[in-house]
Image 1 (cartoon, each protein chain N blue to C red):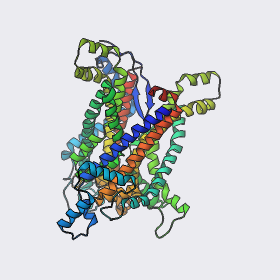
Image 2 (cartoon, each protein chain N blue to C red):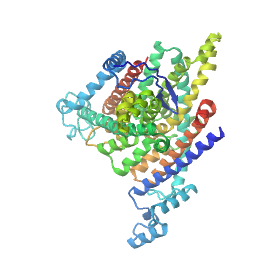
Image 3 (tube, rainbow over the protein chains, first blue to last red):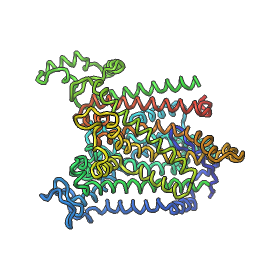
Length: 309
Length: 318
């Protein structure tokens, strides 16, 4: 069991953050190392509170059918009701229970957030590893592709693609997944560049390990911390994007509820000014989800950085 | 430096060409038959076929791309499916308000972010620092449409300090003050989101520079603290911050779309939304392509500026 004695330095250039590392231990974090990361994470109070809030949100999403008082798509004649003992947050323009829709909305928002990040993490990590490790022409082709992807204002492209392909949970997840990988790709590439010449990689090559083995078993474990941090912030930003799309009517379509499409009723000035209970709770849910995930990401970053000093 | 500039420019041009090709492909595969734009609505299939032939729509993809690119360079962006007007005229009308909104927001964002970020870094781990970083977390996490709705609800509906939307009062041509009055809320929404992100960059950039040897030297020489912070610290910290502008412009455009929609600001963002609702793909792609070009040039400018400001960058390139 080797211990890591590393020297990390944060470098901000071209908007990307990468690390320069010296003296690698060739293995993934040892057990004690993991415990240390976990301990540092627990010391980061906002991250702990964020984790608690996030766990509650996940429980709400999973248990929505059991805790929601009504069917979220059930249309009743009692529309635009103010909050009362039966409908805690009132009803919307077609008489659906807003509180139930809010609980069910967490399912869609969290699902889109997490699964789109899973998609783009796989793409970005693979391309970043390949670009960084092989260098040369392969690297410059991949880097030009990233540059093209990053030149398009992503929100605009997402809007255009959704309007061509048609909105829906699956479409939006895939579109977000296929468009958002470039940043992670650059981070992974930067990380690989800084470690590919280290001694343990040279050793792995000279032993005769296969290239995939070197890429995924030797290099990847040392890049994982950056990937985790980026993916966590990615979930937060995917939830924001999904809610903006749904708010504009280009995302999740009613009767399926998402926090964003609950808020879209507030585009009417009458709803905005006379029925604040229809839109404020959904906005607060988005804020809570995104804030808690951002805090977790911040805590993770500090915890991983902390293991280095 | 010259070699670096030439190289950067050439790479930029290649990327630009690929961007136009990608845009063309997307328009090409979007639903809607451009030929219908050039004939009356009761045209027969034979007339349509004739029009396609005349417009060259039956030619191979690459030839059509060449034709489209030539028109694009000459400023002809096609005809709108919805209004049947030239797309370029529609865009020209909307560019001004969007530039006004985005430019003002960017300036306001800097005016907020730089002093707060520097102060936060200087007073690291004080309660002011925690307040500033905490608020910036909140600003990054709040959806800008929710922030916009809250602002309208509080400042326009309840307090009636500002109008709920538009660029000037109904039936009025709009003087300077009237325009500023309408500009304040949407600018605050966009500037909050951008500066929240920027504060964190300024702060970490400053903190990193405080650890540099030249700052230790400056301290050891016995310079005044404000001299150390401003002449040696802030000036160097600002270099990496400039590059954030390049990466922030795509976000700025995304934020402007939503904000313009909420505040009924008559710019490109609102046009985007109405084009999507009308399935007006020609207009949509023109806006997307132009914003991609704007982003590309902003990135090139920041790279060049970065290289000019920091010799280490251009020396590494060679």
